[in-house]
Picture 1 (cartoon, rainbow, N blue to C red):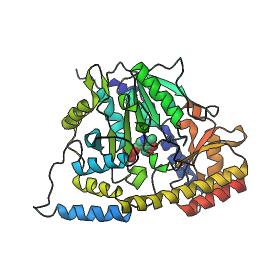
Picture 2: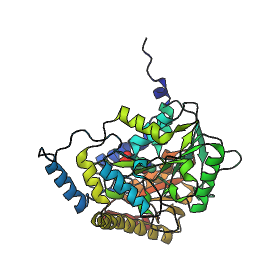
Picture 3: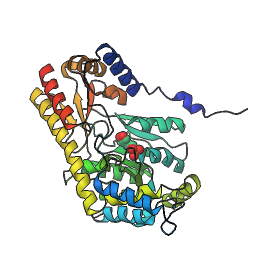
Picture 4: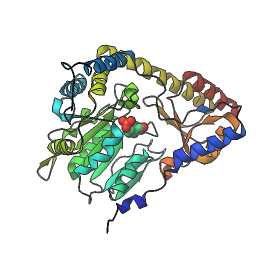
Length: 393
Ligand code: PLP
């Protein structure tokens, strides 16, 4: 008798975005004349920059001529792209070899697939509130999850202590949903702990490009000792608007070994078995992100989102509402006013100000009483939402 992966039946319904969609749909059905100010989306709103679009066109033309046509691409990534990504790290003082960079179709794919490298008996520590895919990928894999709740008291940046016990540690910095960013000393504590205990850190750097403060680490490999205990998973989704174009990269240092096995070698074996690489056209376009023009242009787009963050933060400052994030992250995580619950605040904003945000409770129990604003919307909508917030509260 065929037995399906019964772990799927242990998944909790992903009600968060479904519930938001249902509630907004019902509101619009009753108030069709209203415009909604969507501060909940985690998707970008600005188009791809000019350098990337030109790269896409050129790569499409390459595929039209026998002399420049590409068939299957190398499974671990095109050498030209692995080289520019590695150089991007090296230009920031991080020593990295080209073949320590693996090209992927995005961080989500890698966050799930990377678990192939680890035995099922390993426990995964997830700092909560968390990006929901961490929990779900581990439930599907049948792994025990160690939930580490964070709070306003520790700035949503908890550190390991004598009770910490897990083989895999997920760290997302800048964090989704809280926007909190680990400083060097905090990340060093996790790196030291992981090296001491033989654990591996899965470092999600999807939002690194939003860090403007030079004192804050944009990569875990800025931290001494990380090469023997960390894997970094990164993405061009938010960095360069690739959410619908799809490209990410994963860094696995060659020194990262456990039980005599080199995880970089294991990942080569995994990729050559399970993928046939990322599209040539997309990899060529992605390489443009790392050119001087590409870097300037993506910087201009990120500046628009950062201005949105400032607009919302000014409104919250004026209202005296506690929040974290926003400065070095595209998310602002605020405490709901008057001790309201997350969904209660959601309903209030939707019905009285036509603003849609994301209730914190959807990212884990300790997110109750908090709320996430995304800064990926249009500047016009963000300015109007900020005015409406001030008027309402
Ligand atoms: N990691 C975090 C923390 C995210 O918030 C997201 C997307 O929102 C991802 C990973 C997924 O990124 P990608 O589009 O590269 O799959």
